[in-house]
Image (cartoon, rainbow, N blue to C red):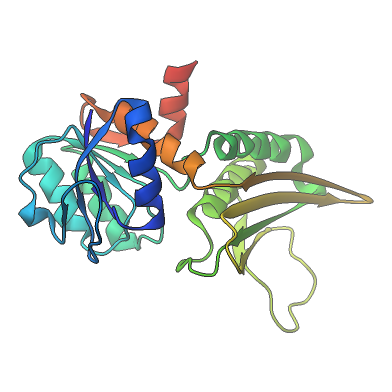
Length: 250
């Protein structure tokens, strides 16, 4: 499997490059706005890429999103979008291109995170409105978007478990009054070199239930990215996510 790695010189890009051979993959080239020496060519733009590949793995940002989606459309290959912080306009663009190419989009590539997503949904279904749900996520001080894409994934799952009638409250400040039963609180912590921690708390009368996940290394996400890229090869146009990949591993 030949891969073009977007965001190749960032921390996640370097982790993917280090693990690639162990997953039967070769990084034929990279694309990065700020190229640095890598064991493969790195370009500033997809317009410079001449190498052939089976898929694009994207750990960059929303910037120049259309450029890489158009590149994949012209090459007839799939793309893994592992970034977060997309605007509503970006999401519409992604949905439009998914009619023509295979797009794997996820807020988190960890098997463990996708497991707690299922557990949190089931917990909300069982506990119901007798429990208040709050989500706390912690990341390093370089992360640019908040809340994390994973926190939003978890919130959506919890909301589905509650019957999809909740609204998201992003942090609290000042005289907010009593907590409303229609809320799911989402809180972002930033500091140091925290790779990624997520906690879903269900607080009821005299008891608290927490479901949590802690990533100790970026390698867990890199491994997930390589599995997702392999999954994409040969797939028809459409939108894919971790649940699709996990079903193939059963």
